[in-house]
Length: 550
View 1 (cartoon, rainbow, N blue to C red):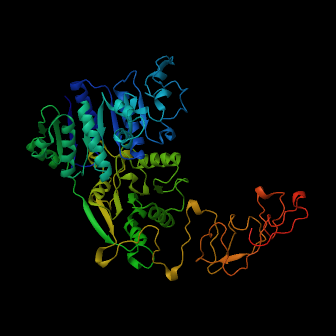
View 2 (tube, rainbow, N blue to C red):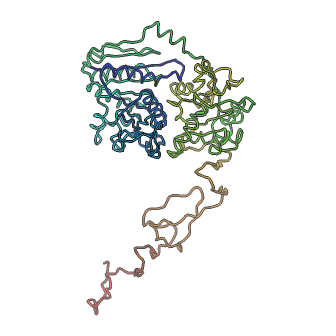
View 3 (cartoon, helix red, strand yellow):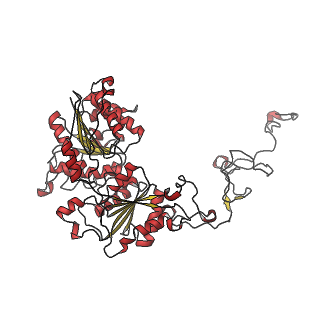
């Protein structure tokens, strides 16, 4: 029988190699249980794209042969490392095994899968796969070919990273999937840093129940997961083995991090004065204007706030855009797939472990940087969020300090003098008697109700509309045809949507309208009377017109 291995880094310093620890656990489990390959699943496409490169490097170091590594999510075909652009180069092996090498160019294999494995439902069948968790959760949903996904997961090690990043609905699906994997005897590795003990206990019991244990016996047990530490549960006996208390304390002391948390009261929208959110962010990031520069990460809760913050910081620190190589960069999930991949790579290279470290860099992003992105910033500024998300965002502050203290900083440049320690600044709109921001899409506090003109890529080139000037409303194509000679109607900002098909205009005398549509092209205008009241045909010649209704 197989088992479930749960790794909880807890209060460890972020960036200590949680994902690499999972790969080592997979190696141990595969040797013990004879599994071949694994499925490494994460919450988002951005984290999956980055993990794909890390897993590919790990497999190359292990000299993997005759194996395929697939990227499993809906936008995998946009990933440049996964595309077919360079299949003709000598350093690429497409897993067919028939290509002739060109000297030393074939020293490394790219482990790129065959085209057959790149279908909509087949990537999980590869020996090694990296993707989003929804690709595996569809195995327990009543969808087509769900049995194929279960077949793809059987015989492998099932690895789930960031197990805390899923909503209650996905947690229920994950529990059912663990139940079925326990029945199949699939080893499971779960990784989490902020998962509540009650949720971890329920997931472990779901796996054991699928392995054959009675639910009545499991209800009387509790399986507390050490925090920080690891927990292994054997599926056959149900016995749990965890890290020793002495070793757990040693890990906590050796890898702990003192984090300074500063709460700044802010006001969203206009009229905040010195407590205006954007003004507070400018004041916090003012030390980056010095000669020593520095790096900062600003995490916003919505894309709209991220865009407003990016435009404001560009005006203050660097007028060049992200595409022009400016020191202020923007990253969120609404970019096209190829643009998002390029920006993610640029942000990761600038704030990664190996460098080169920029002199000055401000990254404005949304929740896409919370999980599995290897970033290190001197300062992190975050909007108010749940505590688990704040811990994830704080993990991007001084992430590689231990490694750099031992092996040297990239380029020989240490941290700026103003960065005396890891610091997280939380922008709290409810502090000091404030109120929460209005709902998304609601009207913010603006002077005299003025609507701001957004200078974003979506509104580039548009003119600002003059206040109070009426705007012509075009006739609806279903009312009076597409003839522009109809009665014009103007409305201001308080206009109404088009009326129903065939409705009458209030206050306008109804009149017959000639429809100038393709269907009426070449036709005659309708008569005023009903066509059957007086038929102008040879058969009706000499007849008396009928009276009364038709």
